[in-house]
Structure formats: C-alpha cells, structure tokens
Length: 114
Length: 111
Image 1: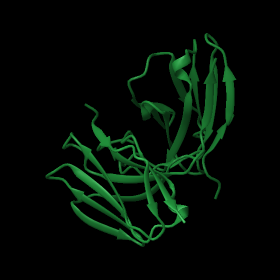
Image 2: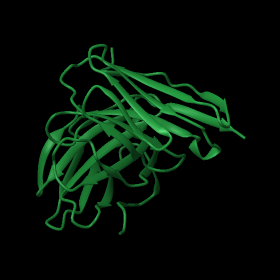
Image 3: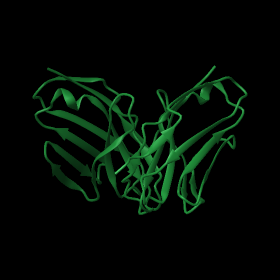
Image 4: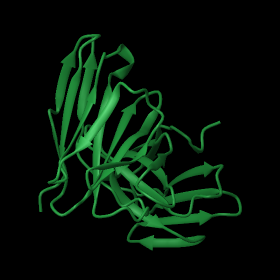
C-alpha cells in the first residue's frame, strides 16, 4: 500500500514569490492535514480538508491556503513568500476525522526562501 | 506558555539503556495522547496512542498517562541504535485531526 506522497521534495524560492505543494493521500483516506515544521516552532497545524471542505484552520496568515480535490489529493499554496516561511511542510492523511490522532505523514516538502 | 511542553534534549544513552521521555500539557480537554517518532529527513510516524490514564505497553515501548498531573511519558526498554530519532508527543482535539505537538526530544542511542 503506497504511503502519503508529497511533491516536490525540495524547492528554493525567493521572497515575494508563491509556491504550490502537492499531496496524494493513502488510497481510501479522505482527510488531509497540513503541518509546518521549523526548528524554532516545531510542528504547527496549518489546515485540514475532508470531502473537499476545509474543516479546521491553524493560526497562520491568509497567505497560506489550500484545497482538496474530489480524489482527496490536496494542494497548499503560500503567496508572497517571506524568509520565515522556510520550513518543512508535511502532509498527513487519515481515513476519517475521529480525532484519535492516527495520522500518516508524508516525507514532506522542504521549502527554502531566499 | 505552550499548550504542550517537551524537553528538547538531546538525550544520549548507551545501547540497552532505558530511555525516558515526557511531556506536560495544560489543557484538560485533551483526551487522546500520542507518541510519534521522526527519523531525520522523514515524516513523523505514529508509535503509540492511548486514551486513558495508566500504562500501555507495545513491545519495548510503554506509554504512561497521568491525567490528574497532565503528564505523559514514553519509555523505551533495551534501546537500540535504530531508536535514534526525535520523539514527539501529540495531543489531538476531540474532533478532527488537528494535533498539538510537543517540540520533540532528540534521542541518540550509542552502540
């Protein structure tokens, strides 16, 4: 069974640009969550999508957005990039939204903003 | 103050030793308690989860929860070099998949 796939794995952008990250969840999983991981702040929740609808949102500015498609694949977008957006962006999937924390994470997309 | 506090380490132990990790949390609304393991350049993977106070054992791993003290622990017995990783406690909200993570403790098991 294939795991969570994230693309691209590494990318470098400059300030002011925008970036789109992609996530393919485990087959059959309908919930996709996104997390940002930095050395200073650790793992922080960005948002969660279930059945193409955003169900939960973390405390991030509006420059961070996402969407989910009918096949459960998800994308997140960061516009007007800032140096502080450099981080590992992790996608996690689960079958439902039971809140037990059983999430399956991808290997992440490492974004560097210069 | 963060909702979930975790000592960042690093924690260096010899092979075969018992590794003791812990987290404290401030919000009594948390009902489930998870431990994730993250190897370098990988995503976190779920190690154990528990719902109630008390101990839960899975092989060499034991998770312990004390809801009255808002304190959770993970013990690794007979530690191996392959246990070298960052261990993160994670507490989900009652609904949905929003996890609040501790900062993670880096563990190094030396052969």
